Each structure stands twice: as C-alpha cells, then as structure tokens.
Length: 435
Image 1 (cartoon, rainbow, N blue to C red):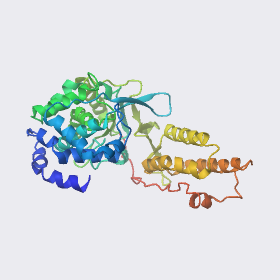
Image 2 (image 1 turned 135 degrees about the horizontal axis):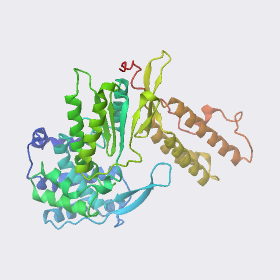
Image 3 (image 1 turned 180 degrees about the horizontal axis):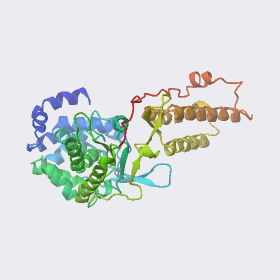
Image 4 (image 1 turned 120 degrees about the vertical axis):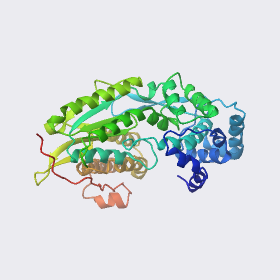
C-alpha cells in the first residue's frame, strides 16, 4: 500500500471504524469510487502490476503518452454520468501445472482495471472485517507462506487427519445473484451495486474472472460462510487452549485438519458433512476425484499450495511435520528452464542466465520455507550442469568443464542465481498419544 493510499484511507476513518460492526451497512460509497484520488490510486495499482493490454489493445505506454489525467477524467465522467460500460475481457490460456490442462485468464482493459480497482479500494476495508482468520488468499498483509505454516503448525499439534477438498471450476461457477446478495448485506448503495453487477455480467452469466482486479475479494466473500462455519466448529469443540480442528483456505484451495483421537471420528464425519452442506448452498461442486481424506499416521501425504505434507521421525525419534515442494512443481520448473535453454541454444550464456534467473528466483522464493533444502540442492545442481553443458557446447566440446570453470565463477562472474537458503518452521515436537 502506498503512502498516498494510507493517508487517503485514513480520511475515510468511518469506513474502518464502522466495518468492525458486522451488522452495519454502508451507503454514499459511489461518490468515493468516482473521486479523482480513488481513480488515480487505482491507476497506480494497475500500473504497478503491469500486465498485458485488454481487448482494446491500449497499453500503459499509450496512456502515459496521451496523458494520464485526461484518461482518468474520461473514466470519471462516465462513472458520474452513469454511462460507463465495461469492455469484454480478453481471454488467455496459461498452463495449469505440468500437464496439458490450462487455466483461462480474463484480462480486462486498463480502463476496466482502474474501475475495478476503485471499487476494491472502497469495498475491501468493509469486507476485510468480516473475513475469517483461516482465509489467506489475496488479502492485505496475508501470504501463502502463512497459510502453509498454519497447516504445518496444526499437524505439529497432532491434527493428522486431513480433509483435502478440491472445488470443481470454482471461479467459473460463482452465482452472481448469491454473490450480490452477500455484498448487499453490507452495502446499501444502489449505484455501487449496479456498477458491480455490470462488471460481473460483462464476463458472462456466472463466475468471477480470474485476472479481474476485484475477483479475489469477491471470491473470498462468496466462501466466507464456509469459513464462518469452520471457525464456529473450532470454537465449540475447543478444550481449553487445545483445538480439535484447524483449517486453511487460500482462494479455492481448502484443507481441514482434525486431531488423531479415535473418539473424535464423529467430528471428522460431521465437519465434512457440514462443509458439503455449505458448499451445496452456494452451488459449488466438489471434485470427488481429487478430494480425499488423508491420515498422516498411516504414512499418507497430501498437497496444499504446491507443498507436499507428511509426517516423519526426527533423529531423536520424535514425530514431526515434513513439507517440501511437490515433485510436479519441480518437474514443471525444469520443463520451463529446459525450454529456455533449447530456445537460446546459440545465444551467449549470459543472455540465457538473464532470462531464466527471474523464473528461478521467483520459484525459490516461494518454496524457501519448510523442508525444501534437499529439493533446492537438486535444482541448484541441475541448473549448474545445464549452464556448464551450454558453455561446453558453445566451444564444440563434450563434458561439463569441471576443471575449466569453478562453481563460484558461475555464480559470481556469470551472475547465476545462488540464493537457496531455507527458512524452517515449525520445530519438531511430540505428537499426542492416540487412543
């Protein structure tokens, strides 16, 4: 959040104070959406995220060249006169995992990103107060690492029975009428509701577009009742400081953890039944082929946000949680880097390194928690060997040039990425005795 946005939001102090009361409803919001300060902040947010142009082909460079203020004034005039209509989003397919499946992104035009950003700036503080502690996806000051660590901590506490739920095409099947009803519980502003409805309908009769600026907030709101139910289950089954249930949700990825005591078998079944009931109310389907129950005490494992979890014994023969990058994630990284080497087979090695270093850095930074050391060592060794082979091929020689170039030279002179340190969490602690 920029300094300007912090100051601007403080000027709307009533929003933050009032949003702490779940029964309060808000009106007079549309005028704030239309303010130049709001639109300017929304434009800066969109520009900082960069991204490809929408269906109209207008880029940030073109907007800067013709004048940002005139661009924003035109949007403001359309909003004030209520003649604004969003354009159809441009569709783009991106690979999903290491397989042949693809995820369809909807890329709005920059003007529509600005309007969605303005809506988000006004509505987000209201709904943030309603969101639950176990929800981490695309929320301010919350990260995927926190969600991953929440799951790890729950396993450390002995919650080793896992309900791993996969939602079928969640973003594509959000019901607009139900979503707008949820928004209307807090927002009593017809102009804002009409603008939001128009934005949603621009992408079809149902669903929230993956790639839309306001989509993450709306998708969290849609599943908020599921989170509320799970929080209530945690509260009513609590025994002092010890909880029998924990959960973590990041957008449409949801895992529920239940303690290992056999006398709580009913709890495992009850929680799964209640989750299914709440999802049925929202017309959200569960992918039965990918959803399953896992028992870590039986040496089973499960995945969450790209990490594979299982429990192992430490050197002191104490059970502890182990979580590291999934094999598929490493395979997908190697495939991406291999394609870069293939495409640049005749290019200087420095150019190749400049192209794949950002990919490697981003991948490592995401997975640098838990037990990723062994995986990182494998990745580091694989990349170094590919660089060596590229160097030797350029000289018409075989081998890997171990005597010609040291590993230190590859990293310090060529600039090959070398920051593979891991942050560990949590420490090994005994699991409770199961009876």
